[in-house]
Image 1 (cartoon, rainbow, N blue to C red):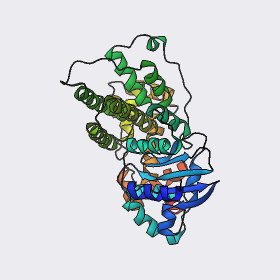
Image 2: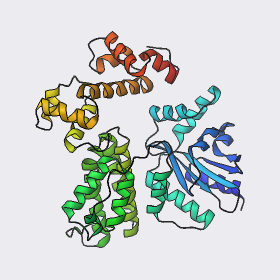
Image 3: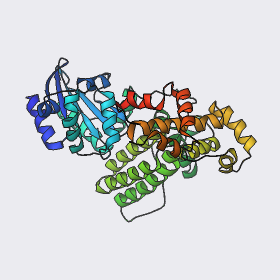
Image 4: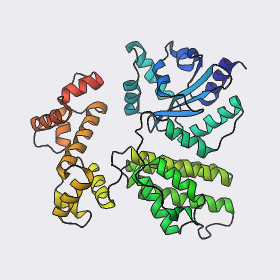
Length: 397
């Protein structure tokens, strides 16, 4: 096969940048052909221990890799943006790779022109290419599980407890099943969720919602997507606006499908996606639902001056109860966690926005800019200006 022509045709058809390597050396790249420059660092995202595999710089910026078995060829796909390209995603791309200054402007224009695609669509592209190139058809579940194992930039959580014997018996009731399902998604532990879905196999049967099996499956999917988003991903700390957007996209994707198998495959990918996003929210696994609620409330209100009583009121508990439980479960005081969240928000604003230091200080509720600067330097070891210059190269305050 003429693999260079194959890559060119795939890029023309899909709009996804493609790089082709032979024995580790590039022989073709869509970006190089358009710009005369190839950011080779992207290849280091892969451990290349599984085939196919994909990696991500963030939940909305992905890459894929397929080794052509029996040859020295490897095909790399990406970047693929699973959300509308914006300044933040461009910053994430540039912060990961060393892009020469003369190529930044044309590369930025090119990245903005790339068509956004959904995560399930990208999974299907990799499955299709693996089938065409290696003549192997793998289940989406197995592919996705490999993906979770392949992510270098995602710290692997240790399994804290085994799934109980009850889960290995007959299918649980709808209430028990949903309680366990949404709890695992909120905990942000894809490995445990994968084990749970593998052992339960079948979702508990529901009442009739439509006149055909296909419509029944779609209606069930819509209900599951909405609850998994709110009771799972959002409860686990994932960005609520992004979660709602994803829910709409998954539902639209489901409506286009014409087989039960495709719907079940999309359902699995959706649940794993929500779980991964909850895990990346920064809320630790293992805390009680009450403390998780408080932590999520704090993260959503970094621009206000929260009081212990106000936070405790969210779980209808006393301030003393909250302070004791929070310290025991989170390993830090409520005040320390508030500062942590404010500093992370400040770092994000310094990197991805044009706000002045005084504007960021006021937004985060600090009494004065000098006080904000002192807290920031104590937390990061750099002043806000030093942090912004180091991350972005911008000199303005």
